[in-house]
Amino acid sequence: MAQDPETFAKQIDLMATGKGFIAALDQSGGSTPKALLQYGVKEDEYEGEEAMFAEIHAMRSRIIMAPDFTSDKVLGAILFERTMRGEIDGKPVPSVLWEDRGIIPFLKIDKGLENKADGVQLMKPIPGLAELLADARGFGVFGTKERSVIHEANEAGITAVVGQQFALGRSVCAAGLVPIIEPEVDIHSPSKGEAEALLRDAIAVQLGLLGEDEKVMLKLTIPNEDGFYDALADHPNVVRVVALSGGYSTDEACEKLARQPKMIASFSRALAEGLSKPMSDADFNAALGSNIDKIYQASV
Image 1: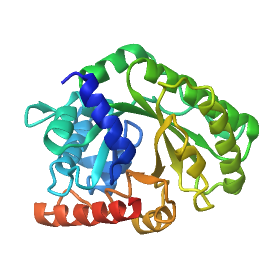
Image 2: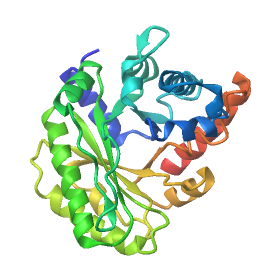
Image 3: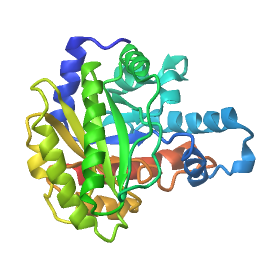
């Protein structure tokens, strides 16, 4: 299901104007055991990396095929690379999302974080980036996601994070995809508000350097001040601004997000809150449906 211009244009319009949120199903190697534990699968219940990834793929497949996981409330889904290359009932996952569910597929491309320096964590190098982006287009993926973390209001660190994010973002745009630029501000940072002010200014500078056809999305921590990122959302190069849950509970994240008029959710842990493997399908679908509805309402 390689991407074609007509589908891409349709997806751009849907992502820019549609009602709903983006589901983050992209836990990778380091965070997978934690995600599985939340899902009620202990580390002694699987042996080795392949078995671990089989368990997380089964969990993600269960979410994707749930009755409420459709384009009525879910605009997009961010996938881990193994999930992009995986299948559900013999069909590639990105094809299941777009063709069967009407949901736009994204791919997490970062390879984790460097050690903390200047109050931030930059992204590690991404070997084989060009080949990965080409593969993503071949699978019909619309965009990518790449995450850095800001721990404190350090101007040099934040400038470095945003510069790295936009340099990578421009490579993604050149490959015909839309990057979700994610410089997360730690919700526990003692200087969160000051860091958000520095971040907003740094992003505005980088947006001003983009060409007319370089479209990006922003994934940001829900800010202390309501409407704080509205001006970024209105920038002509920004398709959408989405919010990460950042460790807040589902209810708290939704309550905070509802006060942000120009942000929609892109939640991971909050989406899967309360779900567990031993649940009956009826109970699982009901719990997921409740989470989806809360996140949708907060997003619209």
